[in-house]
Structures are given as structure tokens and as C-alpha cells.
Length: 147
Image 1 (tube, rainbow, N blue to C red):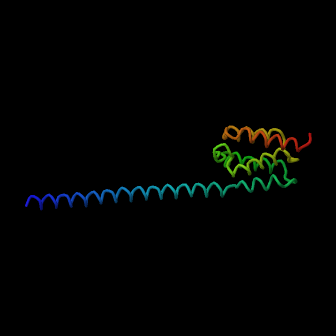
Image 2 (cartoon, rainbow, N blue to C red; image 1 turned 45 degrees about the horizontal axis):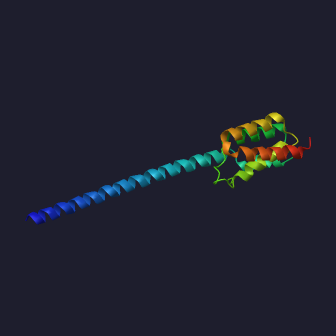
Image 3 (cartoon, one colour; image 1 turned 30 degrees about the horizontal axis):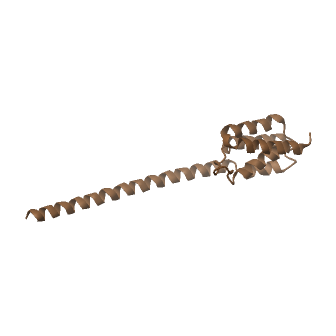
């Protein structure tokens, strides 16, 4: 009789433990899904406003006016100032587009020193690990201007 009672009590505890574990994992999964949906919404919202490709397209066009360059630089500074972290000592593959933006901005015919310095300072402030690479891109662009 005592053994039967002990077995029933253990079985009840196992069932309660299984339910608690199930509730724990279910709540953890639902919170991750909510967080993921929120992050996806923020990314969509951010990329709807302006994209790096749009900034680069303005910089590639030699006929772009100073005002167009200013708008694209504002877009870059406001939405895309943070470059993905380095992979060890190597630059992240997405850094190439930032390097091209700095290079093309610094050799664009309609740009001026204030615009170039603004982009350089903001990118270096937000991404101190890329300071050397950004300086190299800026130097290449300024040397290509032939001043």
C-alpha cells in the first residue's frame, strides 16, 4: 500500500515536471518569435527609407548635384553609419560598399571638403575598428581627384 502511494506520487511529480518544462520552452519560443518579428519590422522600416545601394547610385552618377550628394550623405549618416563588426582581423564583406562610398564621395566632382569630412568623421566615430581602412579609402579617393 505504501509503495503504491509512493509510485503514484512520483508519477504525479513527473507529470507536473513535464508540464513545467513544456510551459518554459513554449514561453521562451514565443518571446523569441516576438523579438524576431520586432527586429524584422525595424529592419524593413529602416530599409524602406533609404538603402546603401541608393546612396552608391547617387555617388556613381557624375552629374549628381551637391544637394543630391548632401541628401545621400544624410541618409548614410542617419541609417547606415554602423558597419558590421570585423571578422577577426579581416574586414566584414559588407565593408566593401562603405569603402566604395568613401572613395566615390571623395573623388566626386560636386563634393566639397565639409561633406567628405562629415562622412569620414561619422564613420570613424561609429566604427573605430575600421579607422585604418576608412583612411586608406579616403586617401585613394583624394589622390584620384588629382588636386
